[in-house]
Amino acid sequence: SRYYTITEYPTGLPREAIFALCEEALPDLREGEVRVRNTWLSVDPYMRGRMSGVRTYIDPFELNAPLQGAAIGEVVESRDSRLKPGDKVRHMAGWRDIAQLPAQDAETLPAFKVPEQAYLGVLGMPGMTAWSGLNRIAEMQPGANVLVSAASGAVGSLAVQLAKTKGGTVVGIAGSQDKLDWLESRGIEAVGYRDKSADELTQDLQRACPEGFDVYYENVGGVILEAALNCLRTYARIAVCGMIARYNDQGESEGPRNIANILINRVRMEGFIVFEHWDHYGEFLDEVGPLVERGEIDYQETVENGLERMPAAFLRLFEGSNRGKMLVEL
Ligand code: NDP
Image (cartoon, rainbow, N blue to C red; front, top):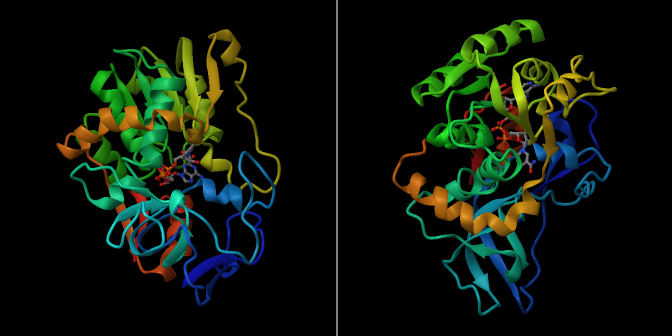
């Protein structure tokens, strides 16, 4: 089996040199275990937090030990009655080509007619995150005006489309022209943020939605949060999903200068972690699975090929050169 480790905890944007590709011979399977040939590996922004060496809501990665992450693969050998060779499964032993794990830690894929890697993206953790933040945290109401940052990414692209199915004006913020074009092709008002001050971005958001927003789905933080705080209606709700602009910060992060707008507009701002909502995954699949199967949700993927591309694929998330779900195909 070949797998990735990190050799040190990075400060700032990780260098590719901290990722080491290692090789080991796997022991014979023990009772209750399966061996899985991974076909798709996920890279996700939250993995940066696990590289910081401290516990956040989840333990840090151990140095010089196999990294973990979501993966899809095919069972090639089984010593458990629940799984047999040929079964397609999802599990957390990613960042490697062959995984060996307890069968109870691998789940068989739901039966929608979608490509298997959709269960790492639109019908997997990022999709579930979009749905949970919008419905369970922001409690989005029909007709609400919704603002989403990192709006063409794995989470954001589903958040804008779900909001659009029941919303008023939906505005997505993204970093490049092709992302803005994609948003507009889905009927979303698109606003670019690169090289703009909070005040400039505020003006663009006000132009896109003069009434202001009832919901802000926050993926980025920093300047974008400050601009969003200028454009909220009374009693708006902010679902704080992520703050990717800060994950590589080295000192203290600057706060939005207008944080008092939360008080002035009686805004509720709430962070959440998707895993605490996982008991609703079935409900999410019942609602979103058929939409994806029928092609009513457009999900995009950016794919790198080969295990060696894992570090580069991961780093693309912070450059913004991914569109939709960033994946590695083996
Ligand atoms: P994406 O597919 O959205 O990829 C990341 C995108 O973030 C980039 O393409 C880029 O888009 C944008 N970005 C990166 N760096 C910056 C920066 N410095 N400033 C502004 N934008 C930046 O990733 P995901 O959809 O997987 O994740 C989106 C967010 O959701 C992240 O914050 C992540 O941590 C969070 N998340 C939270 C979960 C939870 O349980 N709370 C679960 C899953 C994800 P652009 O070109 O538009 O700038």
